[in-house]
View 1 (cartoon, protein in one colour):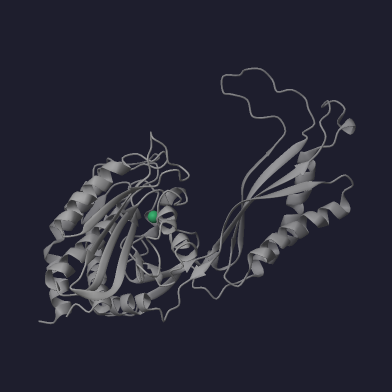
View 2 (cartoon, rainbow, N blue to C red; view 1 turned 90 degrees about the vertical axis):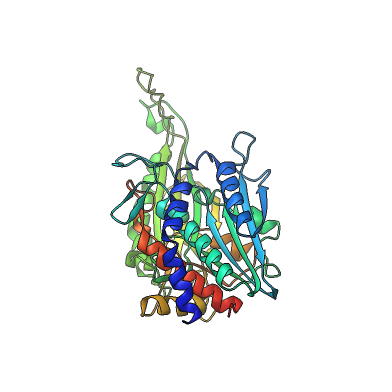
Length: 427
Ligand SMILES: [Zn+2]
């Protein structure tokens, strides 16, 4: 029997272990915010990976955004050296999950198994992927103990809130540097036969229009910042949104609607603060002297950030031309540049070959509409050989009754093990 067949067979034989591991991970409610039980899950992973011969490190992202004594940002990085020097393959999974929300028909932290699926918050995003990568590594180590190079598995904090106390922190400390790691696979739920090469860019900014406060009965004595913002919105409708819809990317972004530039208005607020729920009085009459809007612009690899910013400034300048007294300010809140790993990159071709071997068909290449931890690996770590590949259906992430299919996990683990064999020359 070929080594590929033996790896596949052994992973299938360990299905029960894979399911139990996924259930255990789901039962640790690592909710973020605020960042609960990070230490608990790191300790659990520590015990498991030590048993499999990994050298482990528990690292607290001290001082990172989100870290506090009450909610410390714990991460685990585990490494297992092979018999000879070689390259390192790193599997990175985030350990945090988002709030459960309403509408569940099962216990979100019960890890219930039903009809070939494991249910729970984080089942697909992404504890199922983490479990699959652990089983893949363990089976590969058992069957190919003479491999060259090293395998790393990390469980990292805060991906759902930007990753500053997780991958960004570790990248700054050198854990994701080309000297230490050569191939990165992030087992996010992208579907078992798809390889995610990267993501679009993000620019968040706050746009503020300025006015002058006055009594609401005599608005002519003031200057209404909300009306100015209304003019901005109108200008966006007339000139900006149609222009964005025209910009199409060559990146294989899914879903189809995200193949163009997009802009969302995340929030808007003008005038007096909203009153507390227990306040039963009336609001007071004032002309709003400022109005603030937060925009969420997602951009394409064909666009650059200066162009994206200039476009918003141009909208505001056009409004200024037509409105006496119009004044504004733009404050950048957050930026991430688009990234896309090349199809010829070794991690891509290895995983593509493994997908072909397991499913008997070509892998599909996709790009994510939103960002994930690849942004830090790319920008801080300077690692270009990185993809997201893992079991689970992306559409189920963050929803009630989230689940991961057991067969999907088994097959993804097979793909991961075959990729390890290809990259580390197991036999
Ligand atoms: Zn995720």
